[in-house]
Image 1: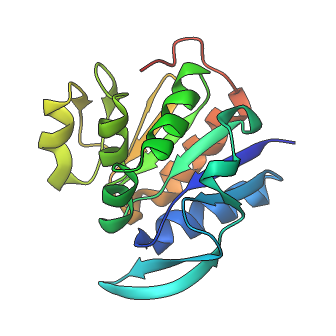
Image 2: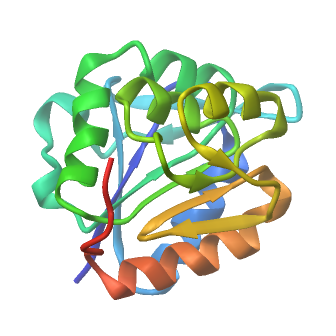
Image 3: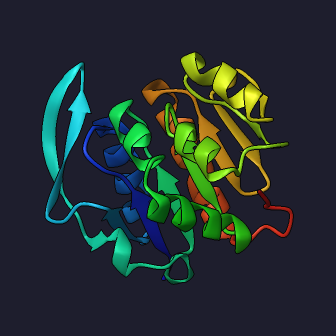
Length: 181
């Protein structure tokens, strides 16, 4: 059985965690919400705080070796908090080192920039962070979903159907020898 980590903290965009999680579980994957927080984390939706979600595992207690893939939901607060957490950055880097699929949507690439894994990669994001990605060496394109050797990115919640489909496809394919940071 495939096991997937969704790395998130307070202020994640609700649909960008809920929709991929449900899609992956429908495929029979075991999905853990991994967070630097214990207990529950609070989502953001339509410009306001929304529902809380149970944290399955604390970031300090997990290793990338335990998972087949990593998913990073967006929101503005969530990736800005995670990018300042060295444990989160190491966790992200380890997926790239192990050539495992990584998927990020919306503002989540902020965390990837701080992890130093975007240079030379073809990707997309929420349009307001295009400059951040270009300045970090990424090849930014405006497409609903971009796949670059096991690395899946999308722009916003409207792209979730395409994002989820490609994410599941990449997880099923497994490791990508060309996946790199």
